[in-house]
Length: 160
Image (cartoon, rainbow, N blue to C red; front, side, top):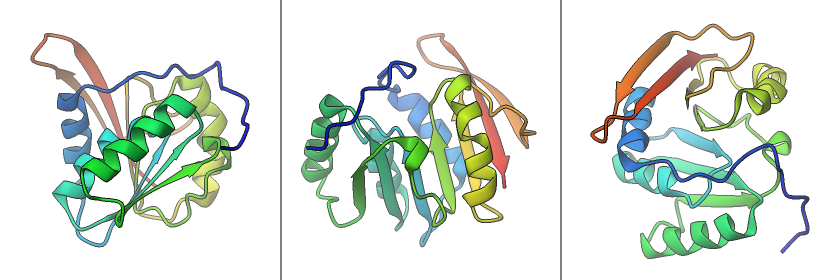
């Protein structure tokens, strides 16, 4: 395992399944898409996406605990041929192949990523994040969502 500094500006939080499904629905994934998840955690979003459509999934992660869980979960789902996990900081991620991008990062990190995403994402790429918007971007949609447990989430949907 490579020795990366652990990012203290991004908490490792597991996104609840209901939110994962709603974000994937908003991305409108189609066969042939390439979905990238920056800070993919345990890969639950990528696994759910790969079950929705015949797509290629790429996740970026540096936290050892999350990497271990991601690899285990992908193998258990039988999706090692369709989901790739890359051990590198999301600020160094290669995003130029994305047709869809899913994020759950703080506004500060999204601000650091903003210019990179503008410069590297192909035109037409669909982007969904929740709870935090991408600074200086205008969302196509802002959607308030109430989970079954009565927690509120805000989704931001963009097209590059």
